[in-house]
Structures are given as C-alpha cells and as structure tokens.
Image 1: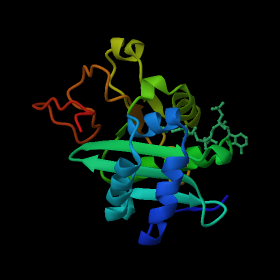
Image 2: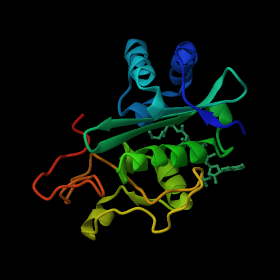
Image 3: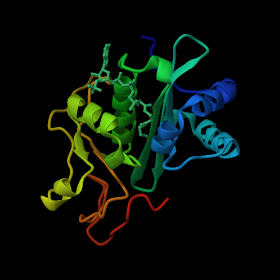
Image 4: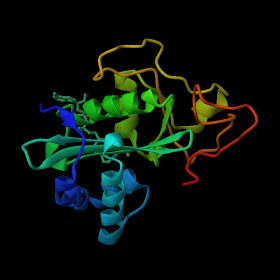
Length: 193
Ligand SMILES: CC(C)(COP(=O)(O)OP(=O)(O)OC[C@H]1O[C@@H](n2cnc3c(N)ncnc32)[C@H](O)[C@@H]1OP(=O)(O)O)[C@@H](O)C(=O)NCCC(=O)NCCS
C-alpha cells in the first residue's frame, strides 16, 4: 500500500471526484449530512487551505483511495474519513485513522470527534479493533467515565496513539471533549460547528 501524503492544489479534482463517488449513506457518514456538489467543492477548498491536516492515499495514482482530514476548532478536533468503495477492506481506513489520530495528538488533542459515530458500526468496530477508546453510545456515557485514549503510547505513526473517538452529537456529560487540554470552567459542546 502506498504511504499517506498531504494534498496539493493538484488534488482538487481528484478530491471532488472522490467525495462525489461516495454512495449517499457514506456521504452522510463522512460529512454529517448529504452535501450538494457545490458544498463538496467548498469542503475541498477548506481541505486544500490547510493541507497539513489532511492525508491522502493515492492508489493507483492519481486516483484517491482514501482521504482523512482533521479540522481543529480551538481545542476540538473533528475527523472526516472516507475510503473509496473499491478500496475498502485493504487497511486504508485503519492507516488513515491512525495517522489522523497522530495529527490530533501533535496538537495536544486526545479526543477525535466523529459525526454520526453512533450510526457507524463499521468505524466503531474499526476503532475498537485498533485499540481506540470508542465513545459512541449512551451506555458508554452512563458509566460516566471520561473517554481516554489507549494506555500505550506507540511511536509508530501507523499504530493507534492514546486517543479516543467520540460522537459529538450525544449528550456530553463531561467538562470538555478534549483530553489533556480541557479546562474545568468551560463546557463546550462538540459538534457545535
Ligand atoms: C469506515 C471506512 C473509512 C473504513 O475504511 P476501510 O479502508 O474499509 O477500513 P479497513 O480496510 O482498515 O478496515 C475495514 C475492515 O477490513 C479489514 N481489513 C483491514 N485490512 C485488511 C486486509 N489487508 N485484508 C482484508 N481485510 C482487511 C479490517 O479488519 C476491517 O474489518 P472489520 O469490518 O471486521 O472491522 C470506510 O468504510 C468508509 O469510508 N465509510 C464511509 C465514510 C465513513 O463512514 N467515514 C467515517 C466517518 S467520518
């Protein structure tokens, strides 16, 4: 499998094509809603404005097999991840998820918010299999246990870092969705963006 790389302006059309080729359910899971083509172009503009926070797997080049983007809003990190239907079950999603988690960790963020995570059993399973803490259901929150990342810190960028995936749309009983950077006096609701 090719390595994940950051996008350049040359990736504008491949990115738009990648997102437009996703089936409706996948687009809903990726963006949190069914975006129009114009909205998708706007998302690609956003990704290309901040390429350091995006990762692509080109396979076979120049087609995009997978795209990950971490959007930082203050202390909150929102993950967008998609793998082309023809490239699934090859480990590309796992690779990009681990790389995205490392991007978040570099900024001191230990919880990645994923829209519709509680409606996405595939991603929940993938996250758990990789060793991530997955906070996506009311049962998890009923334990009143703050989501934390995996205990082991592994230096390999392809391995899961100590980070959690969380659904920002569930009632959040904790002071902040952010791990080590949280402050006691604020109660930001993830997903308010
Ligand atoms: C969720 C998603 C990103 C997963 O991508 P993927 O590339 O298929 O993920 P992986 O290949 O790493 O893992 C998927 C499965 O393939 C298996 N797999 C991984 N590597 C494999 C390999 N080399 N050979 C065979 N199977 C493999 C994994 O064990 C996993 O199995 P599981 O479903 O039992 O957990 C993809 O389905 C997707 O884009 N969905 C739509 C958008 C979305 O839901 N985005 C997430 C929210 S932003």
